[in-house]
Length: 279
Image 1 (cartoon, helix red, strand yellow):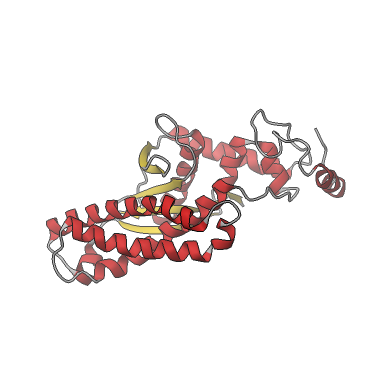
Image 2 (cartoon, one colour):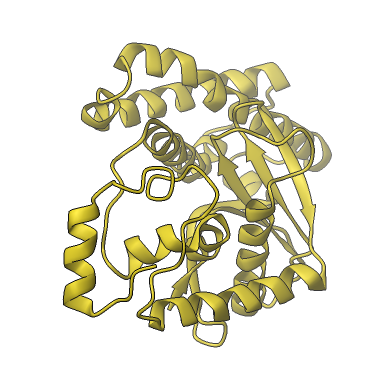
């Protein structure tokens, strides 16, 4: 079974993917990976706590009051996540500074949720459990998906469920392009779109990439070229994993190709054991 992230890793560097997934090499933790995992976990916790927040509303609230309600809960949850991951965070950051610098990302998400809820409440005049039952979209974080037909599995950061469609969302803490989205992010979303459509039978016509560095979400509208590339890449990755030949160095500055001596002894040992061919 190929994971969706294998597809994007293959687009970035087939050699790196092969060394890690076939030969078992492990790249050391990086700042971006630690930051990204903590932010993702905080967003997941906030999404999972939204039902309790909405059900607690027993009287009409203004947009500002809703924002303060979400902000209080999200700040509390983010503090808990940072505390739970403090050992990893301390490898690269001062824990208090990390919390302060990244809290704005969580608060921004709270503002978006509060605005959405305020609009829905104004239109439907509902409160508490009735409000939660009717609220659309329903957001599900870290949704696990798997398809034997597609030969793919993955975990989408968030899926927004409407009555007749689903909109996947990927959260990216790295650099955003000047406009649009990075190609790998489009393919990642398209793969999740195929998985979601097969599993739930609902339309998935577009998705969003949220670039936290610029606090902006960008839309990806899917077409048949996206889905064709996902299927072609899946076949390519399957062939790569079955091969005994290590791919050539890429032209990027990834950990293995930009630093060809990294773990060279371990690589040679692994290739001898598995009978892989070096390039």
